[in-house]
Length: 468
Image (cartoon, rainbow, N blue to C red):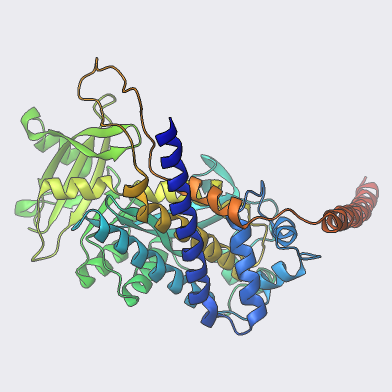
């Protein structure tokens, strides 16, 4: 027991000290992105608030945590301050990739690198937020009013992963409406982009920073985008992209079949299927049956995944450039490494408030996303670097009837645990006068808002009376 406590204390010291150094390092790298010192310092307060234990992340709570008297500085940072959001995202991107590469050199060498593309949403009320529209939101699991943002995640196998790029999707009708465009703060030169085109721009920015992937992965939205696939092939970027069952394949001798038809026609023999793991998850290996089908192009293949219990099929359209290894095992491994982007979304929302932003303007939303990415990068790099030193788990079982070990050990420090350590070290109790000040400020602001809401309700009631 004593040794376990000492190991836990050592892990805390290692993780906490490294996380603080990484946070200071990243904030220092971000300094040239800001025209003035004050907004840069405010951005540091913002990131510190994101890694704190605030139950809700919004302008008020961030300002209170940073010991500001009002939310004005926080709102100015997001809405009006002069700083280069694109340059800041590039800094965070290079910082995250460099840190994960360092962790990989300490641990697993030659591991696969994946660029995982996906989008995530945030429910929003009303019609004033940039990009808000009734649309399908994966976070809600239904059609709802909200916004969607396309992200790129850098996944280094057996080391770690973090978000390194983002572009918000804006509906065509918002860009075409000059009044709505002005109210939402959309840039004058903003053109409509599909999610596939946004993914192309994000990946192009990553390539401009010298970042390379073994494979790019994405779901059906991106696999169905011909422009994105052509972009990858022009760049010599291998990809493993999900496609729908009605996606058409060009097979040998000019035959064209959909994915579903190809499975029915060519994979009747059970020996064509092979059970392999898509990689280890939190509860063990993820086993599926896999098969692949050659196409008219020697570098294009269709990889099919079948669920062992339900029999559900998933289709992956794959391209491997000349000079790179082309094996089914390698494509399966790449397909299995797309899931960390979902984990990045979960961490960003649950730990750092990605979906709690109350900003309305286009630039403000983008800046919130960049600062969340910065907080995630600090914790993700720290977790990757201390993984081996803080992993004291007992050896895994080798028999179903094997008795449990007397001492299970501890799992390595995770991103949420790193965040809690940072919060414990950086959060100081608010002085009593500031607590009293914010209590009064909040109640006064709410009273003012309530008065204006009641006045608006009176005007609406008067219109109803006239109509009736």
